[in-house]
Image 1 (cartoon, rainbow, N blue to C red):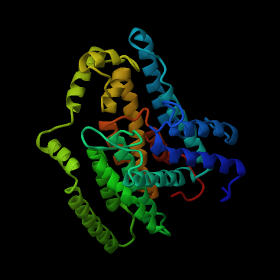
Image 2 (image 1 turned 135 degrees about the horizontal axis):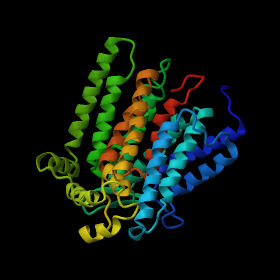
Image 3 (image 1 turned 30 degrees about the vertical axis):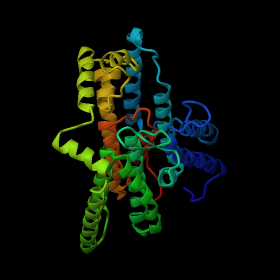
Image 4 (image 1 turned 90 degrees about the vertical axis):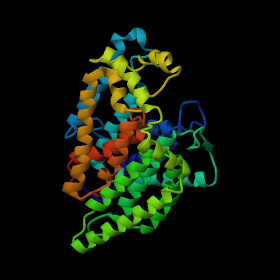
Length: 390
């Protein structure tokens, strides 16, 4: 494949980068309520792709993950139909568009290997921008539990996004290519406001995702000499110690971590999980559809509440049958992330997968565009290329 790109390819590439940059503004709707900057950018990317890309919906090499996720989605729709009296809708537009975008990005990658490497760099740049906004108190609010929120983004998700931005830049700068492993190291300075904001969100999930991702980077970063590996392990240990000492100064985060370890306090998640499991046991095979649990939530909690666990959320939407297919999709994701590292010596998808694991076990993913973007990044391993990819 030629190293140069056509005008159409460059147009589509610009819009995918714009989409990646918008992912840090997924809750920011300055023009129309509930129509965020990220949603606008995603729709623009999808529309532009129809005019600039060939084989937009090819399934070659990616049949399995696509089949798994579409079966899950159709089971959710079917459950919503058979429980129509409990559901406001039988079709989740946001989830469908996210799956469609996931599919388009994989086929975009077939003819443009810049998609994920450069796209996630744009994401990291706006992560830095959000960190600067935090430092200058722009768009910042403080929740009742003293956690930082920027532009209305959920504190946990905000922390996870900062973690993904940091991990990507770490990989981009310190494990760029075998020929040039160290590349633009000055970009690592941009991670400082991102790390400070991550701590300010007091997100335990984000902290664990960042720490485990950084640890995997140190363990699996490719080095030709054993002495260099030992040096990296030492440097990694020093960095983790410095980070630990700094975390001890974060009162809100330390309090939340102490409650988790000493009092097994999951900020009410265990109670939410327990109550939703009652409904799941009543409808174990197909669940209750997209919005079938809303009335139950209002009766039990007094308001609508997220399960804060995607596995439970999947069972609510589509029961055990839907969960089987979602777990199959996740297996593809994590297997391919590992294969990127093992076969092509690219650690990016693997270290970012730690943040994704946190999102699955303690947050949401179906409506989160970042999840589908990084899932496409990992699963792009299945698409053969004729030139070196990093």
